[in-house]
Image (cartoon, rainbow, N blue to C red; front, side, top):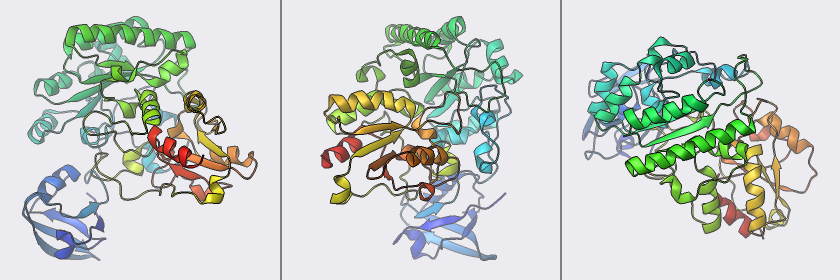
Length: 462
């Protein structure tokens, strides 16, 4: 098992005082070999931490004495120290199978690891979950977790996952809920497989069998041009409208039965269907904001009020891009503050502020931004959608903008504009294809992806 490496040591921290160096590899802590950053943090909270480290090939012992619970002051290179538990399902709709060849190897890791569910909000199917895993989750209270449901009918779920264990693995969801673990669910809709009557049955099954779920997101299938599954296709407008109406109907039923709405359709569904979004209050704190549920309403509310909208449970998680757990996230998970990555735009010089502003974004966001800017009097601000030729298909979210598509778009633009780019499409300063801002034909300013930050920037440029 590769040893976790110390990436950084905080200034004046206990670790610095007692001689831990960046580049040290952690062999053990208090005689234990941590399997992941969760166990690392539990051990690091002790008042005395005996570290075995490897420095330049030499094994050393370092004892750190501090207050119980005081941060040790180390930034670790990875979240999982042993092997990531990979997924043994073979879902036709899995986006990993729809990636082009030649990208960075870690982007092809198809995980089904409950630890990454806890740390980063990744969705797990529970098909590889075991009694030992359940014992650890309960003992260490690893909550919340995120579970892919897709269907509650055993035969449908097994067929969708292409795994016979898919028919029975939701028993673990029942166990987690029985022991008070907070769980959020997801249903990815594949037209012709788990929509229409099957979706009605799934939502009825959730209400009947899993009413303790905090939230359930219903999201449409994403299809890239690299998909080799002929049965996988984008939704039609009518299918999207039917899905929204189904979810809206069940949201009311959940509200009457439980006093909570529980289930929401993703923003993409409303855009595809051409239907108005629910009001902000109906999202009950935006518990699945990062899954594309309520993002538009939160963005609009932040833009109008000038205050960033918070998700339930302590704020909107600070992810910075697709597959952020392998590309740009801190080892402590998305709940941790980020110390690396691309720097956000500093206040622009006066000369730049006098230039016309162009906001670069995905095709879906253009549908939201343009009416919002016009309504608030920013009619001179241009919104320029970046067509996603890299992935093709129905991929139009800002988080999957690639460097080549952005470079192509900018190359066709006249000089003298001030270009704003949302930070969500970057992880550690790189686009998902591996290119960086330096590969673009002109300078762009990276700005936070929230309405309040954009409003402040635009007001300063008036």
